[in-house]
Length: 222
Image 1 (tube, one colour):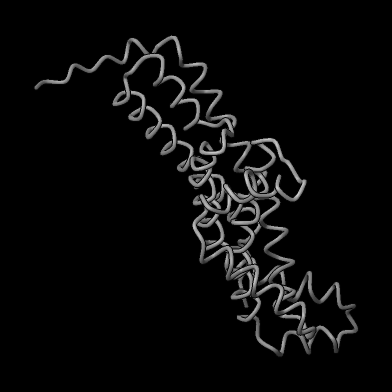
Image 2: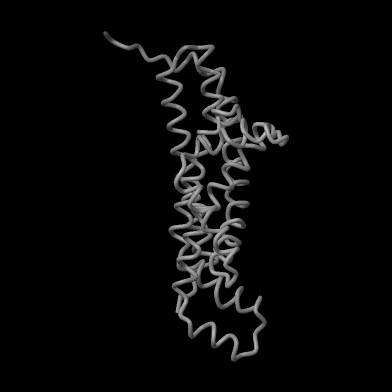
């Protein structure tokens, strides 16, 4: 059996593919921004002297890291309405992706904070810096410099994870590819294009993160 490729039949849908890319990038950007904030707060909670805060942070991280993302998305979209909290597909997708991204980012950020020598904390205190100044300049900034490669890899993974939220009807590239497939029945060609577009977006994100690295994290760690 010889399969006949026919990409021409997909030409009228190129705008929909581009729209899917735009929605995917927007979804990933929202999840990464919110997930980074969640990750920083969770890492600080895990380093806190408060036992309830530490336990809450550990419970959140373990829950997210040890359950499938698809189940998390289903729970937020299909489960929460039982408690009276209904979210639209896109809102549910952003919440699910942000919580997932935040849990993995938290462990990466905690590792960076642990790598900061204790003497730097004491030096900051000796210089009379406020706690927030110590956190911002002595802890967070050097820690981000150390963990940036791992963190950017985690963010690219968040971009690729967006494909799963098509299961809760959130519109992005995979969901649009599926809808085109139901009309044209050219699955092979459609998913070759989708694969190429995900690859292109991942490479674009990688270049963006490298540019940020060169611009903001080019100073020495120690």
